[in-house]
Length: 250
Length: 222
Image (cartoon, rainbow over all chains, first blue to last red; front, side, top):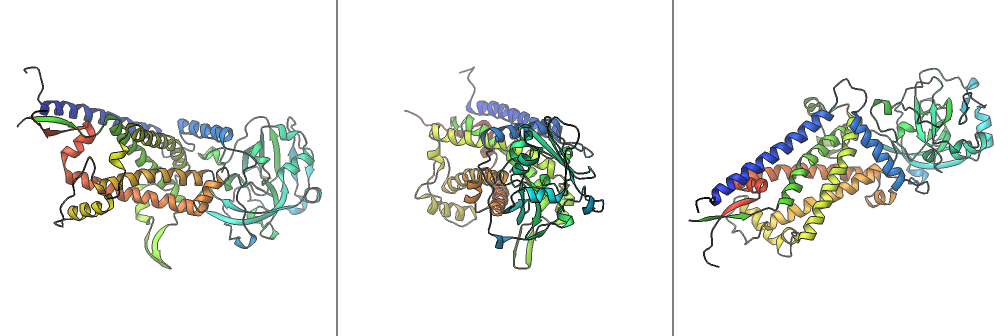
């Protein structure tokens, strides 16, 4: 009996061990969080979090994403009001008379050709779609767009470039730019749009030509496209460089 | 009087519980960072708002503003751990048979009312109970169910195009977001009541969740 602990002593021992384990675990959780929580002036998110976002992207692209998965479409009567959020890249006055898209095929450095709006709209089938435009901030708005499928555009003006893994698009002044994976760019609902809710695009919504890509958050739906470049390397992205997920897929 | 140790909570349950605690806290925190960017929910009727989630003083006191990107990164990283821990817990209760002590039965709903009356100070007698009383059975089962719903509504918001069927099941993108938010508010309410009940029940109850045991009177003979 001398060596045997009483129930009270045994409970005390177990309690001490339990509290120590719990304390160590909570300290590790707080420590891990403090280590991951960035300094106030940091532009990008901490490396480990970026790694998880990229891991999530690989999981989604392998296990979930398919171009047969369509974003929900709506009857035109459900159209609401779309906020005009992003102004980056729209600072210069719009010069429609001299506007064109610089198209850079994969493996090339020079833009060829430079396409005018008339060349684009006359060469490609016009597609209309009413989708729920989703901002990364959390709001959404049912919006109707009309334009041409980006896959049709690529086949007509940059045949072969659809084999490139990435495409980059930028505003004419280069201030705003997005990087896209080719599969999402080739999605049947991805449009180069020139009309919104039955009227030509307004300047604040990206006249004369914007991207509408319903399988991505609004940040990827670049306005006033000035350059389209097919790339082997993953392009930079305006918002990804400020801490957001590069993929931003829905 | 001889005392013996009585096992209250299995080692596995305690680990699941205490791993879930900081994870849920951080999921709620990172969720707040995201919610700030479009803080549209409120309690009110028509044009009258009783409470807006959240008032300005809340944001200025907590400094959670302008951290959407960080919130999303944390949320979509920790969601893995939250989901894995939750799924493993449910598997564990099924395999171990502990679900029998947790899932409410036919009598639980009537008994839960008695427990609630008793806890609120009425002189209602407590019905006989096993490891968990009827109110606990209902609450703890509900919270597990809510965890599953948070996961599903979260996925419906995360990939509304790839998981369009799930988003449709939630009633659409906007509804999924609404459901996800109110589930979280329900966790916060649960957390408050849960902590209050533990404080009321006293140290042995908390200790049992930490070390697994409590003292019981020894029964003589076999």
